[in-house]
Length: 197
Image (cartoon, rainbow, N blue to C red; front, side, top):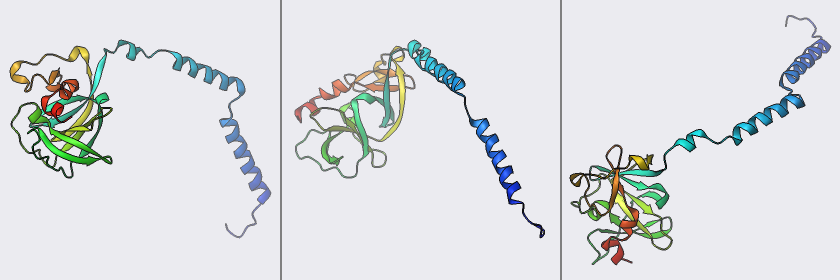
């Protein structure tokens, strides 16, 4: 300002006029608000066409073990944790890596490659443990690394050729991208896991 006096009354009038214009622009009258709410309710009440046309399927967590990608049904998993320490179990089956602590509980850790009958090997890096969901048992499978969660339509699952699937008793099918789907029920019935019960 250049030494002139401020007309505070004029400033207050201009501010009040600006506030009034903002209030008027933001104000929804009752009828317009009601119409918007009814339209929103109609849209939400409509069934989702995508859900009706989508083929039934599974959501799987992809994992890598021994250079191969596998898929484990997400609904059957309790989580994925890094393996920090795993204590060997003397006299345990060769598939049993040992026991480890996760989420405040002891979990039996099995090597997925060994369960599939593949040559044993150390995971790339430390590996991680995929915890299987079960009401009474705490079992996880060691894999090299977790991948992503992906949807697999039931119509996309095919039977793998004999040379594509190690441990055929544990593989329920092949999903797109050469992901071998592991049958969790068959895992629970595996002799190495069953004998540790």
